[in-house]
Picture 1 (tube, rainbow, N blue to C red):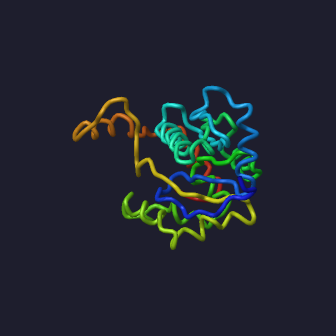
Picture 2 (tube, one colour; picture 1 turned 180 degrees about the vertical axis):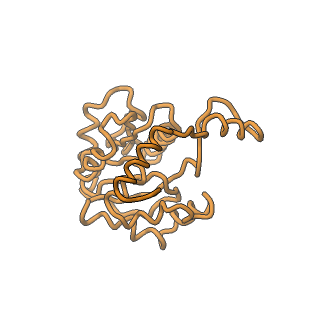
Picture 3 (cartoon, one colour; picture 1 turned 60 degrees about the vertical axis):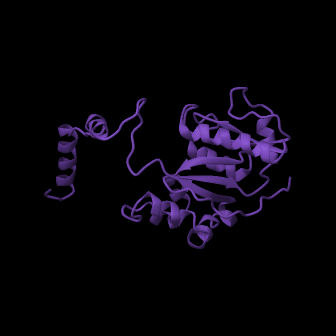
Length: 217
């Protein structure tokens, strides 16, 4: 495996989270990590080169299941030359720490939240502004269009040694449930889980702070 990765166009996946890959030595650092990998890590396939992937979700989360499946497909497509091992539950560290590990080449890839990417470069902020996209389909189309985001996704390579491969969404507003919900049931879920009670104590503290700063309201 070459010591540096070949730049690839971003895949058609939108934006609440971003997938980063380290530019330097994508294989060496991942192989070093794989040598001491726990047996319950996802997609611990019998392959020559294992890419280490960090995730901050649990083993039952759709992202973990999808990444594990991708690791298995990668092993099949390369006839056992490459595979992926997914570390869930922030096993390799919190997202901010993992970003540095990816930059160092110790971790091959990581799924991180959009704000973490914004912390690296303010140029990513417009992608997360309210109303920037008409709907999820519009968001997917934009983030899958290299002519729009290609330069942005590769903008971290020189300074940060990182590349954004793509993004994906889990819905403009979403909740998780262990049962199917259709029609009126969705409205009921919304009333049950999305209602936000007012915090009168917090309100009073904020108002007092505002008055101390010279604001009337």
